[in-house]
Length: 279
Image (tube, rainbow, N blue to C red; front, side, top):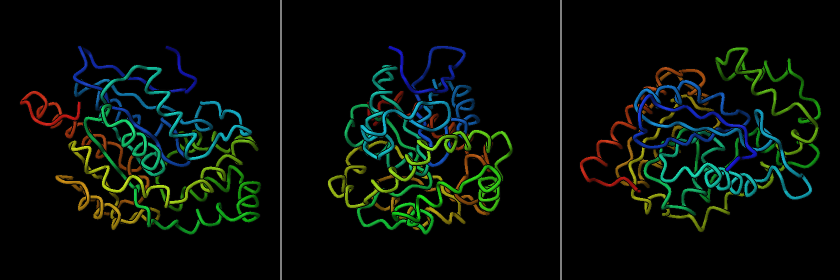
């Protein structure tokens, strides 16, 4: 069935071992996963990554119907998974992609056979960083969104990432219209962490292999969050990338792609040996 979301879908040379589903964070798109998708395909997996609504090349949807909110993104991801009939997946998430993708995973545990989590919390007592607090504040958020220019975005990204011009071009698509910028505010203003209270313990209950990938110097999702997830998810393995910040998949694409591909080999090996696969 066709899907309304733009996406990247990379196939292996032979029959896929399984499917990797990658969900980007804010304000990125499926472009951030390009090295990871290719590495996964070389490892024998089908690798799929959507542009969430209003990001990359995907349409935003109807703002009057709540487009842009946390809940709308979770619903869009669920619909995307169903439209492509992806079946059980290893879910790989970064930043807001974690808040979105992990809610979906807990709501649909039968579709999850492994997790890769990077730079994302999933805690009802979470706290927003300073930029997010500005976006959540009426008036201040509008002033920030209305005043964003391409030059300003480039400067902001250059202060926290080594993204190249192509990557920055892709990020800018999320700011291209007034409606898309307004949706950014809707996302953050719907991001009340207490909504995660019903999900307490649910990641552990999935019982699937889990890899945590974190930049040691992440200023937006500090390493303490990765350590906490490691404690909360039995058997989770945390890989800390020294000298890296928040945007690890853009800044260290070869390293992060290799980590994910290696993890996929482990998941496939466990399944072949009859161990837990979550499927």
